[in-house]
Image 1 (cartoon, rainbow, N blue to C red):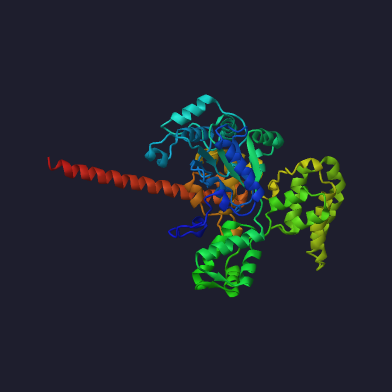
Image 2: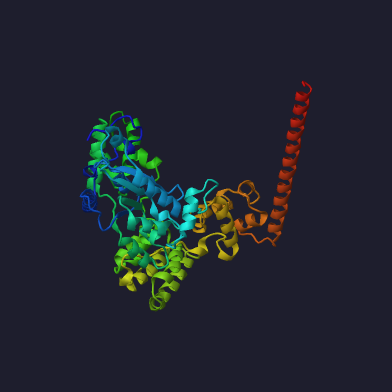
Length: 497
């Protein structure tokens, strides 16, 4: 297929525009095609939604954007408010939308409008409904929304999937985040009754090779076989990353990519080809084979000390009480082995510290998990993460930012902690961010995890107050200067009368 050369971003330039252009996940694409054909037949399918899940870079959003049927797309992405009112407004736009092509041709509107909700796993909160009055008030409000953040978003999504007369395509990386921790099986079943759930996998090496050669041929760039092999081997199955790598190589290739260029790129571009800890723990918990469980953990992006902490935390919700009793000795021994590495050079303790708990969880694997294991971040690893200390602050800041508490806790709170972390070069006496977002001195201490009754805490509070007082004085002086300037200007103008 010919692609326009005007797009400087190769990832966009070579984005497939039809299902036939897609590479990899052939059986998944066939299921999508059947679902689309159901809509095209003129009869509303039983399942009006399509949930495309899987890791980044496998083509989920590309597939959602495919326009081979000439349908229009109304998109609501994760950067926008996605509460009940926002989702209902998108559905309304979808039912009223007419493409420019159809309008200019003066023909009847026969095509569908696809409602695209990207990254629905970032929808925070539960499936509780909000009142119709609040939804309508928000939709008609000119003074600001009554509903904030993602309030009622999941419930309205279910409502949309039950009633829509247009296709609804949703994308996500981790459907378990959409289901939520409590009653996740019930929530999953509620969505699956009205939506086709298709889970995409990482693209294989054969498909990566085919895409790389297609892109390079289109750009008239050659590549040595060993250089192509090396480029593909370092790619974890991410199509977007592959195309971006090819574009980077083409800048210095002078028409041909050799092994030296790929080696130089590997040294300058750091890409995590390991499995993130959430995915590796899911694989381990869902495996009844010690070998497969160990392989998943060894490929994780965490070291044995961290893995033990993650296992200890998540075992409580994944493994039964009887299972926890059976593996308790292995967990204790693992902790002892990891402690030994500080007193001697028995590096085997590092291996057994990770291997023992992994083999233990595989031995008591619960076959009823159905592949759905909810992995959560160990709260005791969060600096200053104690609920009793931060719940009021999180609630206040969430309201200030106009988002939900869960959304603030998941997306903004870790950033707030990081920019105040001394180990990352921050100063506990830098109040710039705290002042900017309206935090008090006590709030600042809560983020730092410093008791306000401690010597350091009292010192910081005193300094925080001095800065605040300085700001207030500066504001008063500035106000007086402005007022004086206005008075003088008025006097000067009056003299002309």
